[in-house]
Image (cartoon, rainbow, N blue to C red; front, side, top):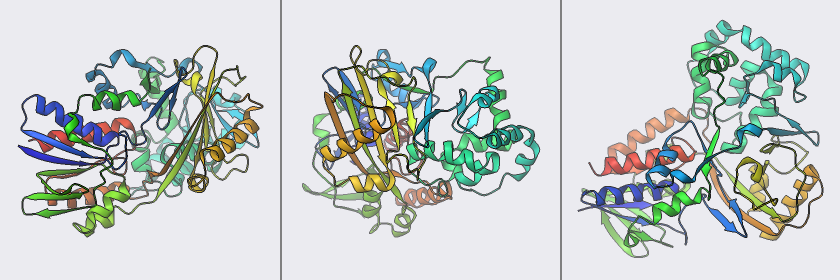
Length: 460
């Protein structure tokens, strides 16, 4: 019987344990121990269901075009739970000089698919609109100028569209997902499809227009989630993992190679395992690997940003602009928020009847500062900032606050090369896997894909 230690019970660790349990049920000679430092599983994936409201404390969905989370949901029997975002009314706003200005229809991140909608937009200056139109005519120039080496998101976006587009759309969009500085984020790691478009077409706008023609004008669904919340994924997997495999409030304090096995230390003492999967946050993983593989640990040094979330449910109607929510450009003096989501407008079944549900997000330095604040202080600040943007609101009947310290690793320029070197080091150690959002993708589908793959490899 092969014993496998899984260190960390976030979505990656739980998925790995579930996959191993499934393989064991099919006859594989394997058992796992899932070490989780806290009293719950799921990490930043958590859904609070109260008084008819469904509040996501972390990610509220996954990117539809990546199939792995949907496949998992279907295998768990949750196919009937899968719902799409309300894309017929999709609209996102940017806070500019204290006013919400809608992004043009047809945008894919900072790339417009509809230049006529762009011309009608009040978000960009005439010079920025002209830069968009020039980009289409610069196909050969952009293809030739594409660098052989990695570069920052800022360099990439500015080369195509200029500084204004970077500041108004590029920076707030990517800060919300990666929590990073666009001047440091690796374009190849966080915008790989766009890098591929540039190599093939030069112009990103031309590439999107070609795709639209090939898809006969169908508007793809951007986000997918579960009717009862993303947390249902974790709950469904946990229900199928043997209880004896799970250890709550059991942080791992050390690990080391001992001949052909791994020794793992926890409150229960030292135990031997045939394989180890480290699915803990990068900082924790690095500390565990440092005595074992210093060169690998050195490659795991990366900046990470924190996030603080405040969700509010309201009994009374609130007059909100149509759409999904708003972004605040980093460094803006207009608000301390990073973003706000009109949750009941983005997805169905999030608030009962005519009730409303909003979420406010703090990131970067503001989030770091708020980590030590009380729930009441965070909620008060979030409500103050939301009202400054959206107008007066009634007293909420539900408030949920969560803090996620250093939850968003920053994929800095050269990230892919560093990860290739890291996984080469880790592979040489034998029967060791690194899972989580610090390596090969931050979205739920990426974490599910890697965890299931590692579980299968570990049982071969």
